Length: 610
Image (cartoon, rainbow, N blue to C red):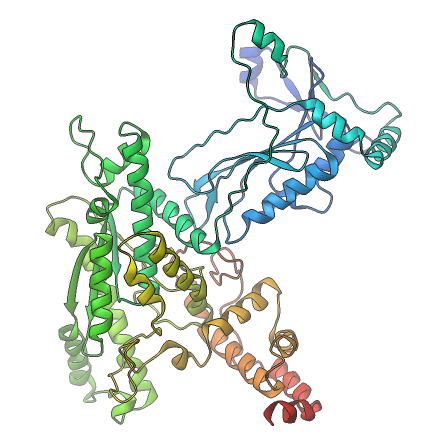
């Protein structure tokens, strides 16, 4: 994680007294300046305007810097932020800035980084100008352009009037001035800087008077299902154009997870195509031509539509076996056609059988599925070999498909394991969850389904996404049992039955484990209240089952594919969840405490079970 230690003022000095910071000798040679004032300070311009700043993190702290700055009379506070995107986080940022200026008055200039930082996080921009609790300008939150500039015309007399109307503000400001020496602080003087202008003077110079930004604008906050596609889409675009890759390769199973990844790439193509067509000579158009290998000569080629761009950058393949259903194969093909990807449908049974024959030659044994008389170990091994061979095929395709199509370069392989599966460890190590990038690795199954339904309504031709969202999730790694297979799933094997818990329950477990920092006992206690419709013994069984599988599979997080960071309960141990990967899977003491609590309340168990 990142840490922001507070700046400690020098001993025996006011918090508003600067110290000298020595500059490199180059500054002295070029400008004749050897040092600069450094500290918790603000600037006072020649026209009386006062300016201060606080850092990204300070806005979120209990005693934020803008409070003292406002009490010292600072009117404009800037925040050059580096705040990464998380689902549902923007509204919290807005609340903090609106609250800050509503309590203290003033102008808050918020600027945030935009783009991928070269890792798992995406910085989502959304610069804002806030005055006295009102947002008067807001930049887009997600965009393929590197820079957005916003502007507003404000009247600083509104700030002075707003503060003067608040007696409590005046009393606290006077108390601070007394504590700092009786006269307050004038700040660091900038005698040659004038920031304000007189609108009548502008008018006399035959220039247009700017319109005052005195009305609150309608806040633009994307719904979580929009964030799920827009954030990862912009993140993927940054990776694609910076890596030099010729596009992406995605194993497309026709299920919700891989279809979500395909849809996110499609949204990327929509954003890039729109920006490129609006400005064919702009930076986005130039990057688009380079990625699509259309940058030879002086051509101003841009994609005619998102499907044309997708045909260059997205390669999808359905890798079926005898255990795959025609339903998922059909969904994968229809989705590939709707998006415009270069799509293949292949069978990998030859590879699976070849590996099993090698095993039989080496050991004299041939494993069988559990439904055909085998053990659970045989069954899992037969499922895993299918999954792992798909990873091998994926990287083969990623290297050779550009060559097949007469193009240069390589493809980035996309993974499609969601945050709940990572938390539970419901994935095969080194299968298709192993890839170069995973845009959904920190997004829950519930949010992904809502995103698919949103996109099916938002974009014409994406009707198949709603069908995929409503289908029961299935791995399709066991033989189909015609007696139990459903028309919606097309298969008898379902994820939630395999896991022994629902995706909704995994969301509860994930948030309590990470965000609420719960272990088995405290999680059990909380869930007995949240799930009051269940008997304590049932809650205990669910909590113990989760922690058993979480600890058993935690090692898989050490090799997890770099994923877009979207949820605070991401189990990715490379940055956001720095925990050990070896646990006592029996949780001896914790489970014993849970059992004691259940035993002490037998009546509760009886009431729920009656």
